[in-house]
Amino acid sequence: MKYNIKSIYNQDLPPSAIEFLTYLETIKGKSINTIDAYKVDLTMFLRFIKAYKGLCSADLEFEDIPINDVDKTLLKQISLTDLYAFISFTEKHRNNGNYARARKVATLKSFFNFLNNKAKIINENPATELESPKINQRNPVYLTLTESRTLLHSMDKREKNYQRDYCIVTIFLNCGLRLSELCGINISRIKDDTLTVIGKGNKERTVYLNQTTLNAIDDYLKVRDASKVSGSDKDALFISSKNNRINKRSVERVVKKHIKAAGLDSEKYTPHKLRHTAATLMYKHGNVDIRSLQDILGHENISTTQIYTHVDDERLREAVKSNPLNQDEII
Image 1 (spheres, helix red, strand yellow):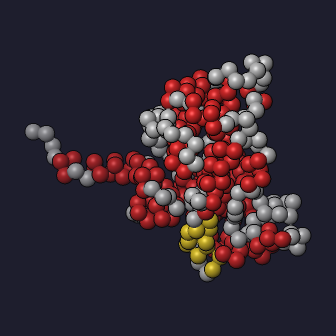
Image 2 (spheres, one colour; image 1 turned 90 degrees about the vertical axis):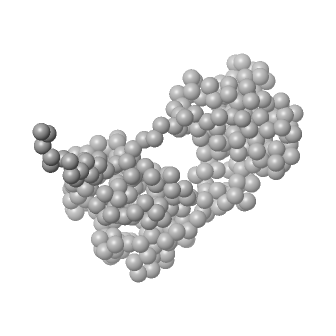
Image 3 (cartoon, rainbow, N blue to C red; image 1 turned 120 degrees about the vertical axis):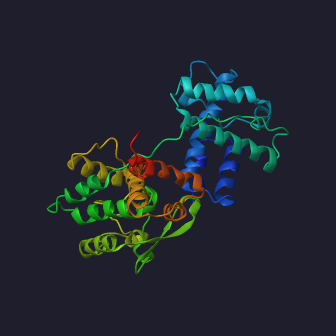
């Protein structure tokens, strides 16, 4: 699915930003979500620059600062000091944590690299020496095997959308799909025990379906009603109550509802945490090696997958117990 370039123009961005976002879509093949994130970051940055340099009325609300007039002259005047001032602003006035600020640093580096090397708008890149905040490694939040079973078994079979919701949760817990990947599933891309999904960067990958997942899909398809669905949405596996492809917000509500009904923390466990759960269960209980897990999750870099090697405290405990000196008595 390609980005609707008209929506970029509707944000009243300057030509340089529009060219950059177009480059990300057409040349780099970035996903819609990635382009949206870059657009949000750039909009905030350019508004900050105008306010920081006194190029707009002090009476304007930050969100009302126009940026479509940002030209080459202003872009050439931006320095490394300005970039650090913006990162400081996001921390102190936008309460951005390390992850959010690191993303903005990545956006600025990419944007100014484009202006310098591709668009040839600036002669020197002020973001070359821009450093990213240190991000401490965080262990993934996930459901235990018992909690996962509790979630599945607690779902009410009498509910109208039981088969659909059960299928959604089952796919999350067994396949580890991203939220956008689940919403984008097409029936035509399910062949025997394989499913083709579009992941980050519009990259296709094959997902293998176990018998539990196949059963859940089959049960749902028996009751799935697409009679009022039109266009390409007819091929969508998951249909909303509005008779179109289910969207991410609806899936988030479905997950939250059933997490809460199972007596679990609905604020803590999101669709992304169910993805973590699938990966963790495969690693802890399925003896899946880290390289295979990388392919299953569609991680481009194995360092992203390696967070799952830190979750199994029980393995470490048993490893220490297995030390032969554990049984020796002190004399």
